[in-house]
Each structure stands twice: as C-alpha cells, then as structure tokens.
Length: 163
Image (cartoon, rainbow, N blue to C red; front, side, top):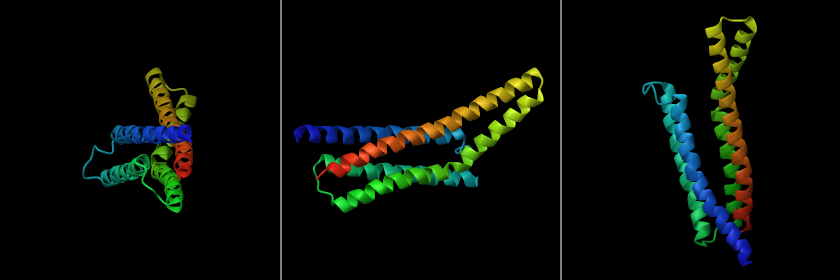
C-alpha cells in the first residue's frame, strides 16, 4: 500500500511541475504566434482571455494535486468530474487553436502549390521555408495535444486511485 501511495504522490508532484512548464510553453507559444503584437486588435483580447483561462486552469488543477498530496479528502464524484473537466479543457483548447491550425495548413498547401509551379530560386527557398515552418507548427500542435492526452490519462488514474 505504501508503494502505491508513493507512486501516486510522485505522479501528482510531477503533474504540478508539468502544469507549470506547460503553462510557460503555452504563454511563449502565444507570443510566438504574435497575439501580443497589436494591442488594439480583437485577436489580442482573445489572447489575453485565453492566457487568463490557462492560468485559472493551472491554479485549479494544481490546487487539486496539492490537496491530494496533503491528504485532504475529495469526494470520488468530484474527482471524476475533475478528470472529465481536464479532458474537456484539452479539446476546448484544441478548438481554440483550430483557426491557427487551419492557417498553417493553408500556408502548407499554398507553399506546396508554389513549389510545384517551379518558382525561381529565392521564391522556391521561401516556399520551402514556409512549408517546413507550417509542418513544424502543425506538428507542435499535434504533439502537444497527444502528450497532454497521455499525461492526463495517467493523472486521472492517479487521482481516482486516492481513497
């Protein structure tokens, strides 16, 4: 029993660290996408709101981890709801990023079409760069979501194992 408890505690400690690091990566990714550039634009208001939502989610899920680490009792039904909420947050975030994903996909398709036309050398290099950049950005979205889904699966198993 002690070994299981130690594994659960370790999972929750890692989750707190993972959540903070993931929040930092998400905030940097927003600035990379340029949401911070034009402070008067509607996109900037959306970016400010989503970073606030990320911060609230970080605090909420970290509070759950800390409460369980401190051996506070949380009702099993509430823990199930928290697990479901974690996965809903992942898919809501993916829906939020769908506009950016679509932008990078269109950029990839346009760059591929430009390369097929046989452009001059500099234009060809620019199209190749856009194509590579688009694949990296789409891959980042996919990898990030996959990592979170896998991690939240194990995290959910850990918090449901507390009794």
